[in-house]
Length: 139
Image (cartoon, rainbow, N blue to C red; front, side):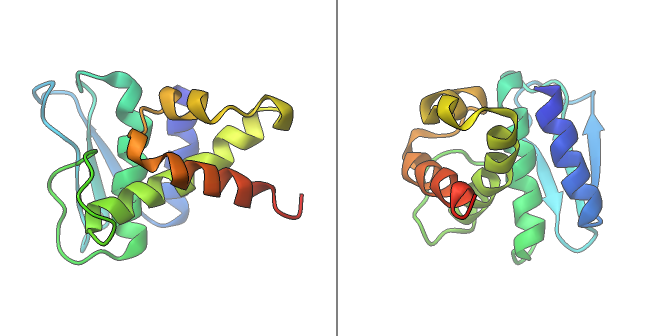
């Protein structure tokens, strides 16, 4: 999982987003971001470590998308396709798909493995399928 986080940290750097890792938070304190200062705060103690890349990608997406206001709570539950949280989840998938695809032979791409590895909510399966297909268009 560290490779995915390093990949995302490079993206953060490219977008001038500061990512801070807090090690003194409760294992249930979700990550957050501050849109105006372009800062993401991640919880190193999160109780489901496998979710960290998706959470980081989600928070980065809020800033990259220019979402309005501060976003204080990571939310992996479905909140409607028009919601800010849903759009950030879609953005997270868009950020993670290229990493997964470049690290996996095309014939070995497995959408279930991708979703499982990054703890992507099941309601995003269609988005995952679309983004993987789009990744390979013209390649």
